[in-house]
Amino acid sequence: MISVTFEDFCGQERIGIREEPLPFGMYGFTKRTSDGYVIILNAAANDQRKQAALGHELAHIINDHLDLLQSELAERAVHDGVADLVFE
Image 1 (spheres, rainbow, N blue to C red):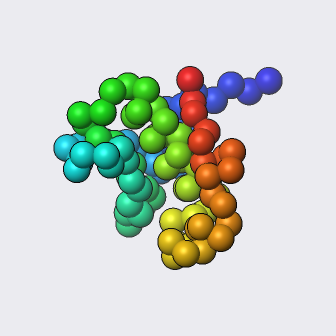
Image 2: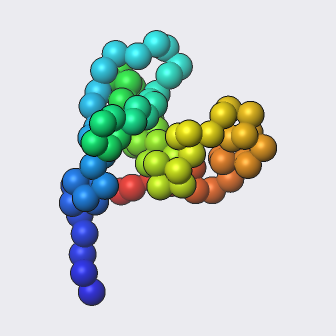
């Protein structure tokens, strides 16, 4: 069995993670970069909120939802299960 760490996964998929001050109630978002993605997490959020936001944003990347319009996201019910993925 091959074991892949979270850091290995992010490196292979070219996903960076940063913490920055974000508006109240906004816990994270993802930006596409020239060579991958960067997930921005709210630096003021507690660890549980950051972890939930990270899982949510990773699900958007894995399911290729970043290029969909918000109306398409609502129609696909993104929040059913996979978007609530949390890594421990």
